Image 1 (cartoon, helix red, strand yellow):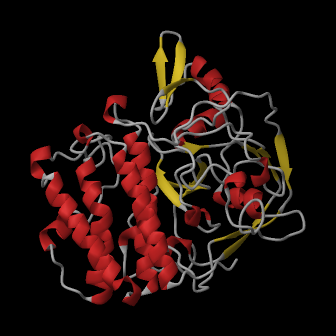
Image 2 (cartoon, one colour):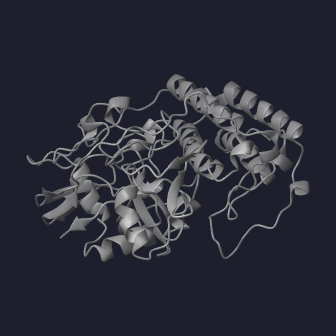
Length: 408
């Protein structure tokens, strides 16, 4: 699959679009939230406010063009995030961070420096900075979902619950054939773990047409399983914690769970989670042996194909967007929530860390992180490419991650 190479002008436009989206995201918070920590394993919001533009200026100006930093102390403070680990929590206090005005001044200076120099910087470095911000837009969204509602101001584009419809989540036969994982060095940007291209022969299997829903998972909870993180219990009724309000548990929205919870449900049903190569075969393979760029074909992602690219804050029913189905008729393999696999996050043959970000993937090839594919409502369109891989620890409960079962 060959993807178009973004020109410097186009990259600049995309960076400005991503900035506007991050400004929109931070604007939903009241001042009370800025120095709080929405998730115990993560930094306070004030770090991320400075981190996005700090990363841009460090990579594009300091590292990419050898321009001395105007704010070396702030660069150091805002440079690195945290790998979520419940056994090693951060201990900083609000007093350890600079004032909001100081951080806003730093952001202003960072953006000015990037805008003045971006077109001279190596294109892969600029693309890396862009996608780094886009990934954080999703991370921050699910983090902010944990804040009390009084600390957030409802966005004009927030929606309610769609009326339910009846549907049958039958299993679909996926014929044996090749799955193409990873990507070639084709001139388009990719993260180190996406290279190189690998062709895997996949035996026939059966996969659920739709993701597992809240209603499906409720049966498991009533059998004694713990409720998922985003569920809230009021008496004998469950609600879903949305971004701006609680909803009576929407029965046909996908359930968001950890990989351990997804695996336990699949085992309870006598099934399994798909492997990374099974996901690829179901999402991008075809009956006639072609390999598609997206489940629906090679056309770019648009709203009628799925719930992604910041169109919604919350999920939508699993049967929505039928035009995004794969060649096998399997729905929502991209969008409305990342999909857990049973595959450990590991390098493809020939893996090479990139000098510009050597620890991006290599630090997580540890057997504790598992691959997710697809994308959520808060995933930027550019990250929906076939080769993109996400990964998290098996017990991480906060992200927008759904799943479906397979029969081998």
